[in-house]
Length: 345
Image (cartoon, rainbow, N blue to C red; front, side, top):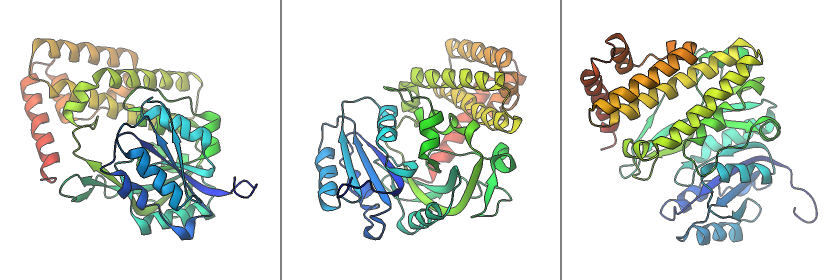
């Protein structure tokens, strides 16, 4: 509320915040855009920080109260901050920007202009990986949208099956999320996959922009997506993967259109591949081989379509050799990981 009236905002950006005093100012400064103060709502959800993150957040609220708000809550994990932010959002559209990341000003302003003019259920942009320390940037996918006219609205059925939308790229209509998205898991990592998959069967229209809006910082030791983090949070990964596989089964049983199922199957095939990466990140052992074989049998039996969509080279080696080429697959995986990290240093 401002002067007794509800502010009409175009976009709510939720910034999940927990002990990120090193990066938070850079993140929030990227949204300090006075020209958009009537349209932009930045909601900092402080998830029980014990460092100076809350003081930094309060400074931005004090300096630009038209744009910034802060909610202080007990620690509940990434999913809890998004659940909270969705309840309190004031914008027509909803985006999540993690507090150790940030947006680039001009691409973000172009996103705001698009949101002001569109009625699409989903607006998708691109993003760069940002290497922590060196600040080198790299596009994870230079051409994420094949044969798409940027700025044009499409039916999901026209582009959905071959697309791949990550959380850094998506901006959803707020009311669609409120109406259809189940509550995200709390006290759990990897809920970004829940956030991007749960709304999919309800997305009718999509607009893609050729804008690298988001800078996704990688190489942090605390990240769940580095190998040590994936090992540390292995149970969380299994929890989210199991929930999404059940969600896929529910949607399939409801006979939703095939193009939605194709999209969900493709993303879950990627998650199955990531599960193999966790197995392969450990030293070679009989125990890991046994776990991989049990997991693979389960996927093949219960989710044969998803099983067939896994194309990773190391996984193919394992399957075609009845897992006897486990050491060779481990080598392929290790080489791949070294190439991925090489550009950061």
